[in-house]
Length: 149
View (cartoon, rainbow, N blue to C red):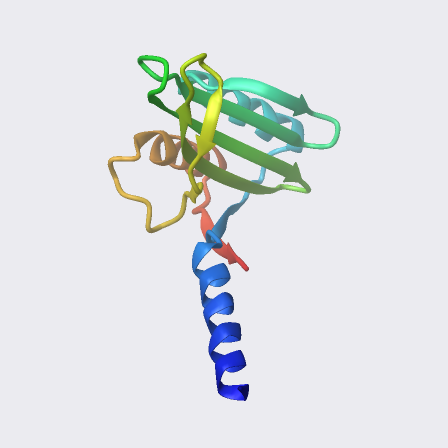
């Protein structure tokens, strides 16, 4: 009986830990004012055709999205989200992309597990690398990626 409970507990543990995505934070130091960095990031995102969804320069918070809608009802679309915090010359950014399936009326039926941008992101993911490389150039600083557990 104890052995069965142990097996069930381990199975549940591994299922939940395997389904949890690894979240990465992209961090950089910038020797510009927070306001200038915020404006630079906004410009970079707009050049990459992101829509600014939420921006507050006073607290250094910005969310931008770029979406590829399904080609037909019942098809798949994708959404890319960059979220930034800028404070005291430090930038923390999170890049997240996910696929979703629409239903026949055009609403979202199912959302797939998101993936997060990091050093492991493939070079074909140009929206991640273009924004990341542009921020490194603007700040004259390399981005360090930190895994969040």
